[in-house]
Image 1 (spheres, one colour):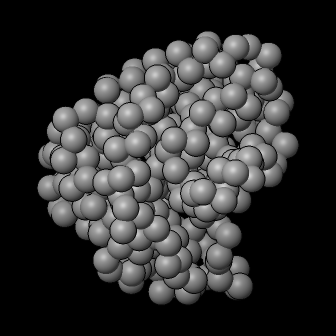
Image 2 (tube, rainbow, N blue to C red):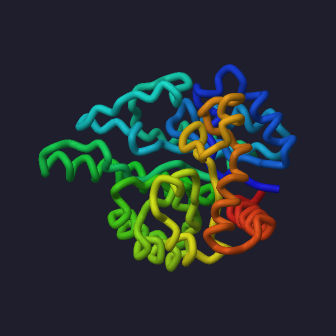
Image 3 (spheres, rainbow, N blue to C red):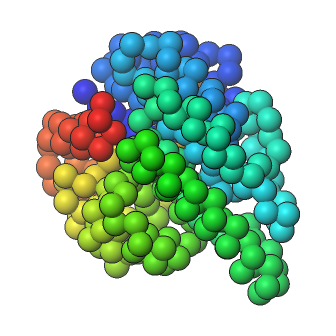
Length: 279
């Protein structure tokens, strides 16, 4: 058994066949957590999860690139938007309503993203402060509902680490980890898990993976993005879109890097996911 701890079957990339994808995923003994990026996709994740007795779960949150700052314009991703594509303020009350579902197992993805940012120093500081405010509100939501968190962090690890020093009682995972070995160790020292996905085929994260204890690793696809290298036959049949079923490739690659068996990495990462998300 495997658990894809970060999927996006709630995105438009699956609008025509989400039930088919989930059916074949569960048939291959893979569970999944569909992660929201704004209210529309968070709501969709909950609706999907509530259709299944087990194996399909939801996380709800506002991704920093969807935060309304008035300072930068983000390019719209047609694979992601399910309903409302505009940027939004974090509305605590509507997310509280979603969090009441028993299928919600985490708050996120949330965090910092400095990939797109304003050009002036003053506006950059305002931009960062707005992201921090939204993140703090979501951390409080997680504490109120006793839920773990899923962090998104791009080009901002030092700022996230600094901020989290005041939130040592929050459990969670740094999804799609792309930081340095030193940053990885700081997250681990604070008790967080690190999530690895197809980005490991693009960036050299081998040392971070080697030095992260097995009991602190989670595996994920981040589908429909970051498709792992697949045989030509598979690509011809299914196309380049990533799916939770491809989580096995991530498990195999991490097993290879850590010089352990596929069975061991499957067993331990599944136990890790069940423990963190209370599955």
